[in-house]
Image: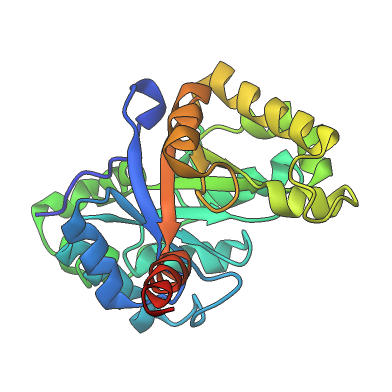
Length: 267
């Protein structure tokens, strides 16, 4: 039985979902994270790992998440409809689109994830991929409502990491079906000419605009331990600020911290 997607409707609750990144895109780690009790696992297919067009690879990632009883959140390279459909057909239910700048870009991405969208047709098509049980859903009586169930299980989020996106923030956040927002301080600073200046006053001001705009609309915020906050106090602060999808770190960070500490044992 397919588990409910905990990210769907999250903004209507006070729930906080804890996750972590698998920067290596390793299936075994995804399952281990789930067995540890993490609600979701971040996989980056924009900057690293295999191509998101490799359906068999993406299927294995989702299968590992199912084995660990956790949920995938996949960052794709862009919001092109063919790419979004490809990843969804492989079974992923939560996609994060980077580098958006306008509401039209967000609307195109969300529409591509739906069979029906905003009282009109979406851009998703029927496929005999993993999402449909390799076509099994079309052979049963329940297949009549497959498209409705699929639409209700998917979330599409965006990374706000560009100064132009902040300028267009209200229109972006008002796009129907936007599932969550990840304010990205790193690339936002780059777009402002403040590379790696995370504490810069103007960068922080733009981040606050994003956070406040999402809170006003009950849109869940996603935050990464490596960039938005650090340590237990930072985690509590992020929750107080309204973040509901929180990453506790990633495999790169965990290995670096654990082994650096243990190497000090013999010095």
